[in-house]
Amino acid sequence: MANKPNEIKINMSAELQAGVYANNMMVAHTREEFVMDFSFIVPPMGTVVARVVTSPGHLKRIINALHDNVKKYEAKFGTIVQAEELSEPFEFNA
Image (cartoon, helix red, strand yellow):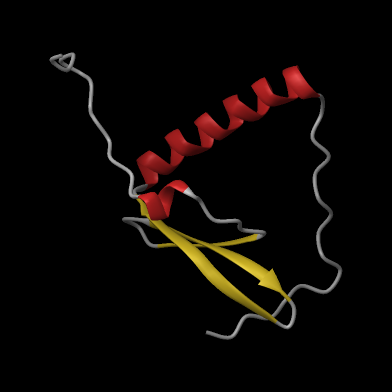
């Protein structure tokens, strides 16, 4: 079967299919890109489990897609209660 003109086949390794759990994210940026480090933190230590680097324009599309999906989720399952900010944030040492 031939692919449709705008259809892109995307492969995913078995390692990536399992996904990773992150309970923290740090963001940095330059003029040209945003860097998002997702980490799993269990005091007294944490591990970066994924790093995503993307352009500012694509980050806007990501934010819009996340916003749209949160609205759909809440319409189906109810309001998401936002996690409280930590009273004493972690200090990160690279």
